[in-house]
Image 1: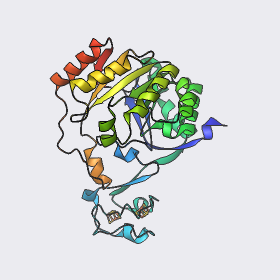
Image 2: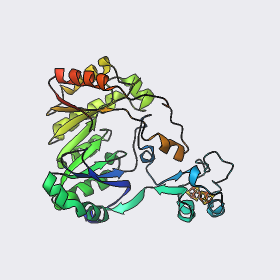
Image 3: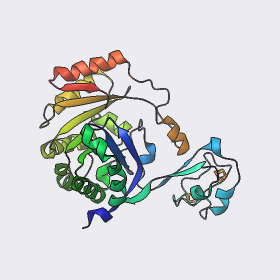
Length: 304
Ligand code: SF4
Ligand code: SF4
């Protein structure tokens, strides 16, 4: 396999991140996720293929998109313009839209193309101890592409990290996790019922895989998104910290407070933001959760 030629679907390459791993990093966002967290700040990542976004405020009602759509998925009378049941995400409408009211999220790119872009910042990586971070979506949902990107990045001397939900077949974990320098593993809840209701998967799946990932990883940091009404309470944070004590090698827990930065994207995708009106946890509350994690012996920080 020539890893440089392997292709995958990516929706963003974000440069100069100082989160998501050590030093200055470039984050490559993969399309596709097996979960459907109600607070997801990248809802365009959840579908595995290209997705069309519609910004009503930029639309001049010219009708060009209606004429070009061979699937009759567009009508100015549709709420959100596009009938998502009919749309096949071909991108013809976004290509022709004169005002960029319609845009496409997700491109098929090769490992070579991505790494050529990423390594433009190699000098910053070297100076800061940074590198590349695979994120998403869930990078493990495109395992061949993720593996090729990691191998290609290592071939160019980059530090490699991956943000993951941990949800993937065990064979994929064994193939990919040992190749990474750092794994940033999300553990959202110890309890199954809230996970099923708000994430769409049983917690047992994540917890079982977390044990495997911790065995296989060179270095691992656990990240807990702190979400009011889901896990933002002492009992839930204690339950996660207590479980993490059983994971090999883990010394650090990062607490990521809920924010609603991605809310506007739900409109662009014609989706409902189901947790509208939810406030971020207060600083005092976050400090209390940090103390709980520290009481289990972890180094804990608030934020990525
Ligand atoms: S992406 Fe293709 S199928 Fe979907 S609305 Fe646009 S033109 Fe029609
Ligand atoms: S092509 Fe663009 S500007 Fe014209 S109707 Fe469609 S979305 Fe609106």
